Image 1 (cartoon, rainbow, N blue to C red):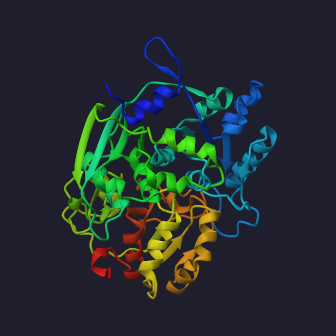
Image 2 (cartoon, rainbow, N blue to C red):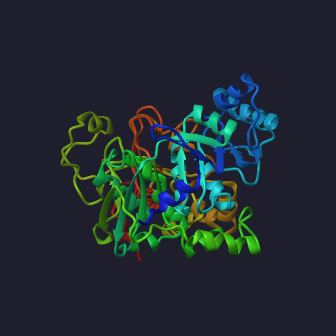
Image 3 (cartoon, rainbow, N blue to C red):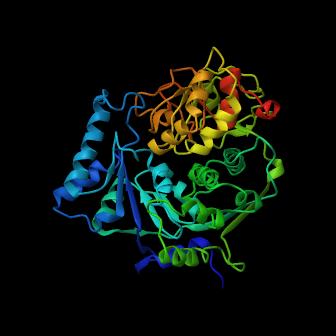
Length: 457
């Protein structure tokens, strides 16, 4: 019997099987940030425990950091305390830290791939739900709780129950103006925000294989928004070409051996999944959300459906049967671990070049890392954004979750490239409409929700 991609990687990392079915899994890479690590470090100190393998840990500051004037002291007291605590803990335990001011600082799920820290076949964890992003490389990557952060620090292992497996296949070719963000929002709208609960999902099919690595990261990033434990895509030449030459990628003979192994990481033809779902790329149009979870989505030309969760529509100030096409918006946020990479910024810049933002709309672009920011400036994208009236800020999670100073005012609509539209996610009373960078760019220019396909050359 053949194995799935998930089974191949999971089985290779089993340290011990516990009576009752749970398994001790070895963790190859542990990513940490300022929000979920302080309690774990405190636990180690209280029990006088060392880090089991500190060389497997990489730290960055991202969630609470300001995205303006990062060279100045952080003003918000709680944010400052958390970042300062991370700095001290990394110093005490001798962990490399990409903190504020570091040329490689950025969102934890952006810096891992761009530095070659993320590689196929790995097990990767972080005290952050969107760790699933790294699954785009053919790795088992998932978010963990604070107690598990401490467990990995102390043992480099986790005691886990094996999840079920699901394969989602997207057949055919995407239409112009349809992006990876639209693919995943479409899938979640069909399966609902709980449709993947209990599963680890493998994404496959022609439409998935055609995507760049950065687009694949967007797909895997939002796999947890359908309740899944994580998402993954089998590595191929697109993956290898992306990883090759990056700082932490294997070199010389080690590279050849790595690729030889990575090339075996795919689901065998006779592998069986616990559940399979298939979609056609031709059915996917530019997507937006209308409610307060990512499963409440529709294509931009549809009308809001009748939903049991009336409270959600009331919060959003939206009615069933309403068409959101043409709805005026006040904010656009382009960023987050979902869509803040250089390809996202290039796509936005290409659309807005020579155009101006709408007078009624504020636009904030937050790159995912200092490396993305530097690349954007080297390519002149910052000048395009400036000419269009867009504000290019410094790296951080920013308005994705409003744990920092970047919040959307109550009652205001924000078209956002982030991953969640929960009540208050972008600030108390903020109303979030999730969309692709391309749809967000069009909304910024026209000050309302539009079908971006009508404005493409």
